[in-house]
Image (cartoon, rainbow, N blue to C red; front, side, top):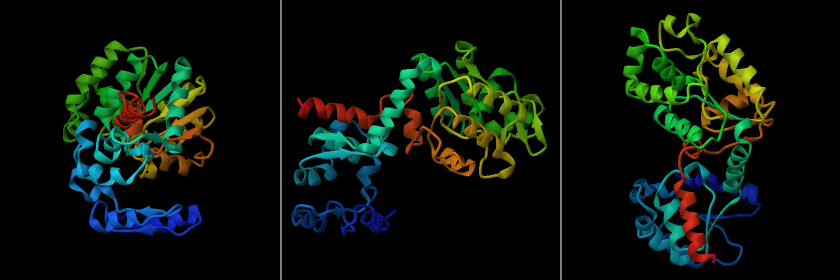
Length: 327
C-alpha cells in the first residue's frame, strides 16, 4: 500500500502541510531530505517496496542494508513506534537502532505499559486465547504459563478445537477438518501442554456448529464458535479476575451465527481490566460496543501474541541502542 493516502490524515492531525515522495532511498528522496529545514516534515514511500525489507535477519546484518546505509547518515535519532511490526527482524525495525541513538514512541510505550500491567498482577490475570494462529498461540500459552504470568488460560476458536482434540480423540469429521487445516501436528503439542498444565488450561464445555451447540464428540463439522455452556462458564470465570487478556476471537465473528461467543466474552472482559489484541478481536469489540470500556486495545496482532512468548526483535534492538548510545 502506498503511504500517499496517509498524507492528508497526517496533515489533519498535525495541523500543517507535509511533503510526500514516492521514493525511499533514491536520489529524489535523499535530495528532498537535504532540503528539509526546521519544522519541515517529509513522508517517504512505504519501505516495503524495497525487497530487502521483506527479509528477516539479525540486527547486525540489517544495519548494513541499503535502507539503513542511505538514510541513517541523514538522521540524528531514530524513533520506533510501530508495535504492530515489533515482531519482525527487518531493516526498518532493527537496523537503525544499531547505528543511531534510538528510543520508542508513545504507542510503543503504551503497549509495553499494558504488558507490564499483566506482569504486575500475574495470579490475578486470565489469558483467553482464540483465533486461528495455532502454532503461535501454543507457544504463547507455554511461555506464559512457564513464566507464571497468568493464573489460568481459556481457549477457543481453532486453538480450542486443537486442545479438545488433544484431550479426547476427535470424530472423523473433525479430524478431517483439522487435517485440511494442517493442524493435526499441533494436536500432539497441545496434548503435552495439557499434561503439564492440566489445571491451568480450560477448554470449552461445548461448541457451536450450524446445527447448534454440541459437545466435542457430537460435532458434525468443524465448529464456528464456542457453545452456550462454554460462554456461560467463561464469562463467569472472567468476573473472578482483575486483568483479562484476549488474543483472538472465539469463533468466526464475520458470521452472525458464530459471533455471539466472542461478543459475550468481550462484554464480560470490559467489566475488568480488559486488554485485547488482534484485528479480528478489535473489530468484534467495536461490534460489541465495548471498545472504549477496555483498559487497553493493542495495535498489534501477531506482535501482541508473540510478546507473551519471546523478546520482540524491536525491543531487543532498542536495548542494544540504549547500551551503545545513551550511557
